[in-house]
Structure formats: structure tokens, C-alpha cells
Image 1 (cartoon, rainbow, N blue to C red):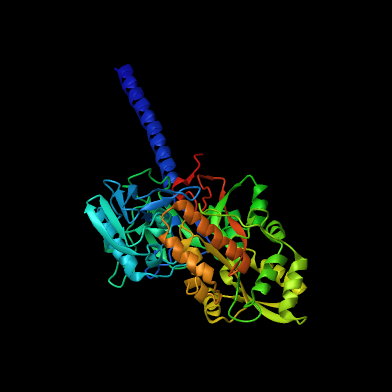
Image 2 (tube, rainbow, N blue to C red):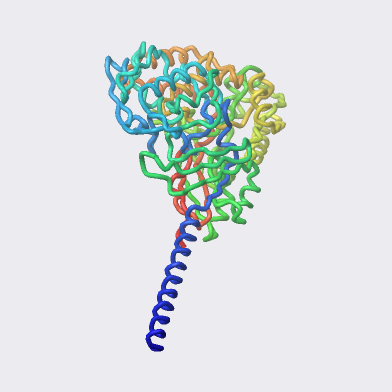
Length: 522
């Protein structure tokens, strides 16, 4: 009897021990799962969700909303919410077929009615400002007569003139789609918008942070991370310190990390660096409405004097690409223009304008450029170089609003600026800068007028053949490299960094692979 009790006791002891082991295993698994679900904190130099009054509310790089037509690695159109399309009636009509079974974050179906509602809103609010790209459907969808529901999954666009390059105009920011319930009557957003992306925006405090949560009902591959917080840290040194200390796990967006900082981290196995080409370029805008840059010879002199390669090598670590071409190399219509560096020619042209005198000019620099790029050093470099052609440069650093106002009123002579491709059809950018009444031409006081450019920009809208369009764009780029309505300096590089404990954070031409980010398993 005693032996039997001993055996029973031993049995329960073994069962208890096994239960404890299993329990510990479950706790360990739960702890591991909890670690997987732990919020990942990143940082960006600017607020990627400007809010209700912004044209898009949040940037496409947050993966909250998606376009009808996406952008591939080389700038080519790829399926987005539309899986296919067909051109009809000599490119005057386009029919888009939507993915089946999609839902917005609020549960509403993604169908033809939703797309029509979106386009009605986008058309009515155009042009609507954003720190990303101005939403201007009246320009990118020029001559749009109607957008019609064909059936639940198909919509038709009808144009007055042929639109053979429509797909390029629709890429990314050119065709954003949200739940129709996201829009207020005035065209702004009413609260956080419902998109279709792999992340939902669940919380946002302007200029402080945004919190993204995985969309568990996403139609495609689901995001790896449960939650990602993106803090706004405008100061470059503060961002760098936060990354090194582990306060944040990675940095994203334009100018997220400087080339010098990236080179420092390359030597440290605790961090990883990712680089890709970028759809953003850097320029010097000349005020062509007043002396001395109302004379094309002075604009030519500045371009000839600036050693773009020296600038890229000395301040951008060789990551960027020197250019004399007004549109970014990501555009399928890009035609490279030769870079000419000739201080002798520059001095001769400048002297023809200044007649042996010296001229004081003001170079304005946006504060966001100081936060994202080595714009202070770049401005000082320009200041030193332009002395050689008789220009005495004073530098003014202005916040975003003051910078825009100075450009609009012409209260400046030169300005450092960035410009991305609003879409992959260069018409929008070229028209903005080169048309006599172009938006950027007016807003930046470029004062540019060229009768041939005006005529070509009219002709290109009527040109059905893609190769003929390329020729027209090529000629416009030649004119721009002679007249310099704006002076291109270099094409940027997307440069980002993350803690080695993360994986999947890779640079894209615009943005990063946010849905692929996850903590490494220990």
C-alpha cells in the first residue's frame, strides 16, 4: 500500500514537472510572440502625415493608401489597385479593371463607384498643396471629359485629346484612392483616412509622430510588423544620436541620414545602410524676374562655373549623381544633357552682364534643407564659388512658409531647392517650369518665357506616338539646358539606415520597404 502511494505520488510529481516545463515553454513562446509584436520605432525628418488639409493626408511611403497605378523600380507603370488596363478610341479612352474583393480600412468595398467618387473629389480640389507633390488633376489629366462606371470592377476615362502617356501620369501620387467616407464636403479629409494599404494609420500627432498598425485584412502579403511608430525628428544630429543610442531603430524619408553619418555607420556592425537611386533632384532656382538673372547669360555663367562633381563628391559622399538635366533620371523619357564646367566661359558671360562691376545677391535656403541635407555647407560653397564671377552672395535661411513667400514675391536672387517627379510623365514638371504661365514659373518668380517651349508643350499634348513625344521632351530638355529656367545640380540618392536588430528596411527610389521591416529572431 505504501509503495502504491509512493508510485502515485511519483506519478503526480512527474505530471507536475512536465506541466511546469510545458508551461514554461508556453510562456517562452508567448514572450517571443510578444517580442515580435513589440512596436518598432523609426524616425523621419518631417511629418509624413500632415493631416486633414493636405492633399493626401499622408505620404505614399507610409503604405496607408494605394494608387490605381504604381511605379516600378525603373519608373515604369505597374499594377496597383487596378490589375489591368486597355486603351481605346485612339488613346482618348482608357478602361481600368480593379482587383476583386478589396476593402478599405473602414470595411467599405473598393469598386468603380469609389474610384469615381475619388476622382470627382480630386478634380474639384485641384490644385491642392502638399509637401509631397501638389495634387493637380486638371494638369495631369488634361482634357478629361468624364470618368464613368462600366461595371462594379471597371471604370472608363474619356478624354478630349489622345492620352497615350496617361499611365505615366497616374503613377503613385497621380492616382490616390481612399474610402469615399474619408472626404469632407469641402474636399479635405474628415479625420484619419481609410485607405487600402498594408498599414492602417491609427494615431497621429502633427509634427510629433504617427502610429501605423498592420492591416490584417490586406489582400496581398501582410506587413511583417504589427505596429510601426514614426517619430518626427527634424534635426539631423538629433536623429543620428537617437539611432545610435537605440531610441529609434531606423531612419527613413528624404535626407534621413547624411552621407557622412552613413559612412560612419558603415564601420559599425550594429547598423546597416541601404542605398538606391532616387526620383528627387536638387536645383538652384534663379529669380529671372529681376537683374542679374533676368539675363540668360548670367544663368549660363552660374551653370558653367559650378563644378557639380566636386559638390557631389565633397558634400554628398559620391552617393548622388551630377546632372544638367531638368527632369530626374527615373523618368522613362529622360534624355541626358551634357554637363559643361568652364570657369573661363562663365567669367566671360558674367562680365558681359555686369560690365566689370560686382553685384550683391541673396541666396535663400529652406530650413528643411538644413535638416535633411548639408545645405548650409552647400550654400557656403556656392557663396565662395560665385565670387569668381563678380557675385557677392549673402545667405538667408528661411523656414518653409517664409521660403515660399520669398520665392512667390521675388524677394531673392537664388534659391536652393529640391524637386521630385510628380509622376513619370515629364509633362507636368516641364509645363510647371517652362510654360510662360506655369505654376512653378510663377510661384518661384522664375520669369521664364520661350515661345518655342510654349509651342512644344502644346504640341506634345496632341501627339499620340510615344516616340514622337520622346523627341519633343528631348528638345524641351535641350532648351532648358540652354536657357536654365532652373539650374539642375544632381540627382539625389535614397539613403536610409537601421539598427542591425531589424531586417527588411531597404531603400526604394521613393520611400522604403516598410511592410518588410521586422525584428530579427534572437
